[in-house]
View (tube, rainbow, N blue to C red):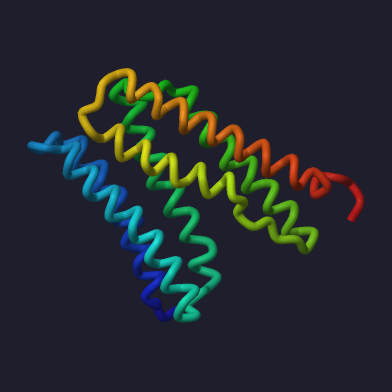
Length: 176
């Protein structure tokens, strides 16, 4: 399989995930700032690869599969770090993970019925606010700001998950 530019950027994002965590675990001087730079660069590759794929007709099945997986892995890696260092309760991360599995499952059932569930507005808001909150949480902010970020992540996650299901309840019906 020949790799196009969009797919190379997606793979770069995947490679940046262990680099992000390695910087944090090794505790290099300024680790959070280095991790922040890596996270921000990885997040930017998501925007860039999507633009390139659409603009230059580089949409592939590999990209459709790998791009959202890379995004979820990047976000979960950051949140796992926050849980480990006590910046995020594990239950908050569990809500994020359960929502992702539930929405992915809903999309699989819809696809089996010949339907595509596109990303909704609330899902895009959830993604953007989560990325911003992760960036803020990598900075030396007070406990109150950290708690606000966790609340924003949890609330946007729940809202977007409920919205996906409410708008697509018919997908779960027995009728084909």
